[in-house]
Amino acid sequence: MLDLTLAEREAVEDADVWLALDANDIGGAQSGVKDRDTLSSTLQVSATIIHITLGDLLQSKWAGDYERLHPVDVPIAANSAEALPALLALCRSAIAADASAAARIEERRRDKGVE
Image 1 (cartoon, one colour):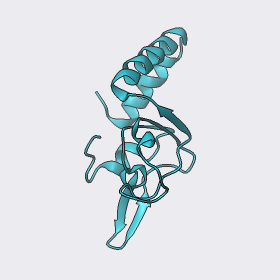
Image 2 (image 1 turned 90 degrees about the vertical axis):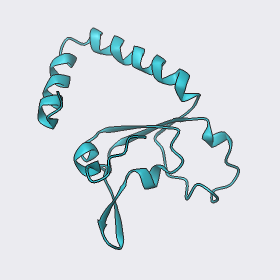
Image 3 (image 1 turned 180 degrees about the vertical axis):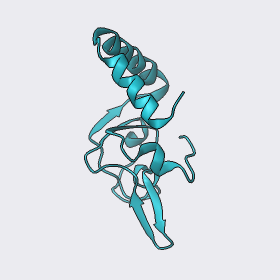
Image 4 (image 1 turned 45 degrees about the vertical axis):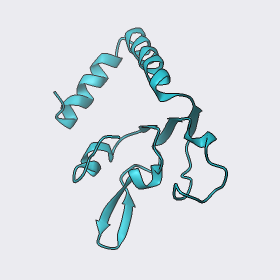
């Protein structure tokens, strides 16, 4: 997982999809410190959460070593090292097939100041 300390809100606050790879605590990973005593989500409520992990196969109860189980929209039980390259290939194919996709991606990069 990337360390977005002090930049998590700017990095993901308007994300419409969040891809988690082998995250033990998705709720904690998507939360930021609002003030000293309050955690707040850095994601839009409508953001789709996709989680690729084999970790779900290890958990046998709803509470334990991994905090509470956070709801996930698209759970994928897979080895992330194998699933991620396949997912990237599918995304590249979809972008190549959509003539306007490259322009939308470039516009989003400009809006976020990503080179």
